[in-house]
Image (cartoon, rainbow, N blue to C red; front, side, top):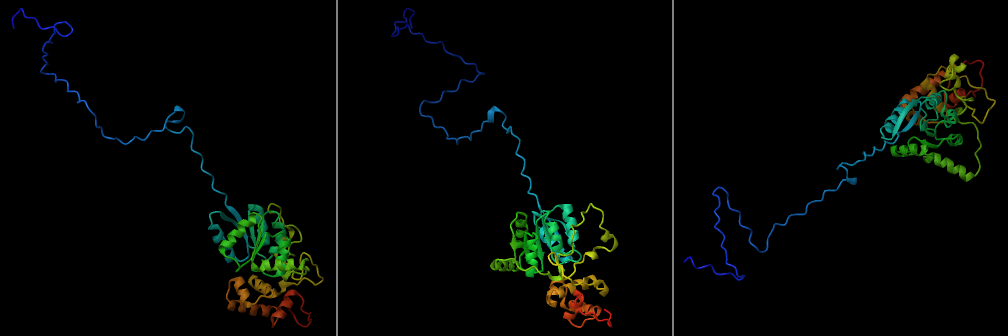
Amino acid sequence: MPDDVSPAPNRYGKAARHPAPQHSSPHIPPNPAPPPAGPQHTAIQPPATPTPSPPFGGPTTSPFPPAPEAPAPARLRVVVADDNPVVRAGLGVLLSGRADIEVVAEAADGREAYEKTHQHRPDVVLLDVRMPGVDGISALPHLVGIAPVLMLTYSRESEIVHEALRLGAGGYLVHGEFTADQLVRAVKDTKDGRAHFTSTAADALLAHMRLGTAPHRGPLPEGLGSALTTPPVPVHAPPHPLENSEGLSQLQPSVGQSSGYRGSAPTPNRHQYRLSSREVEVMDLIASGMSNQQIAATCFISEKTVKNHINRIFTKLHSATRSEAIAHWLGTAPRNPGRQP
């Protein structure tokens, strides 16, 4: 181009200037080309889960300590009173096998039941009727002042049911008339003041309600209820003089007497017959009117064993029949001066 030729002016009247060529360094890579104009297609990402903001702007952990666990419910505490060790063991396994029931003590007679109840203060006492020494009816009025009492027995006589309820029993169950679950429910309800009765006891109550009057209170079978004429001695008190000298056998109930009856019949001297403890138990059941089969079921022995006991009893009582043996046992047999007992 000739030197006198100037570049043509641009539209604004100034000469157009061409920028000097750029020489990039061979060591620096050129800037990447911008993305082409036009609609951009991006991959759709799933929405992120929002992170909860900590309360009050604090740390992510809760500022409150965890609530303490609720305490386990207290187990219902039971004392079992029955002279039969097999019955006591069975009840202990049955009740203590429940998560909410605990057998805290066992007793073999009414006095021991009072002592164990006084010591452990249970929620419920399961009490048998016929026990050597102090029977259940004799101990009942002293036990109900400490804990609710549920009668649990083989005794089904109407007079005994009435007397037990009159003295404050919270229910009456006869063995063989309830299931294990029904027993557990009865124990729990007795603690809460709700009464339970098996069919025998319920029939006795129904007959009483139909009569509309209290039945005549005559002597109870075997003189039940007469063993304790004074309150039992507390466990922390000194022993009773009778216990020191002659033991609890002095408290053996005298048949023909009850808490509401004092007849003129003399108290029989049963020690003269020298019966063993098992023979005394069998003879008491004979006097109550039980058959050999019923005695066997009550004592958890065979009928053959019952017959063997009866033969020895008849020999010691110089009796040939049940009625004669009962008369000697109750002290109602006529005196024969020429015959030694």
